[in-house]
Image (cartoon, rainbow, N blue to C red; front, side, top):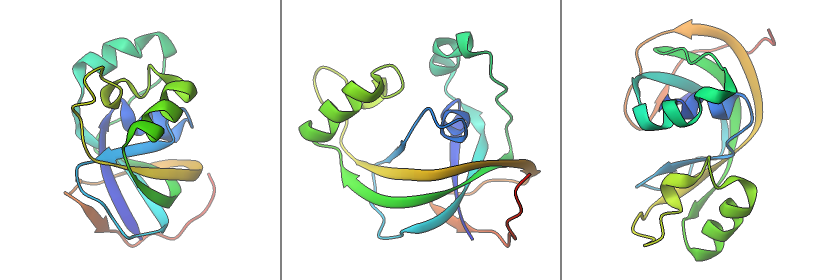
Length: 134
């Protein structure tokens, strides 16, 4: 199964269904099931911003299964949609100068799973996983 490694707190926000898009500077044609891997790297400013949620932010492990249903260029229309959904979660791509350019991977059908500790990789990578709900 395909896996994407994401820094914390973003991986957990996806696992908790608080974030519907993952952003990258590259696009993907892949659509289908994907595992969400919480990388060992963290976004310190974002961790402070979301501390009030009181969530656990594990690292170095796969924490959820989901589906990539689309890959959209981040343009003004998508920025406006994200601002309406949750300006705090999408803060990084909603900067006033619209300087950030890239793609949003639409993530749906999220199901948390028991953590699987494994090192992450760049891009989309493969892991042999048999899905069972926790």
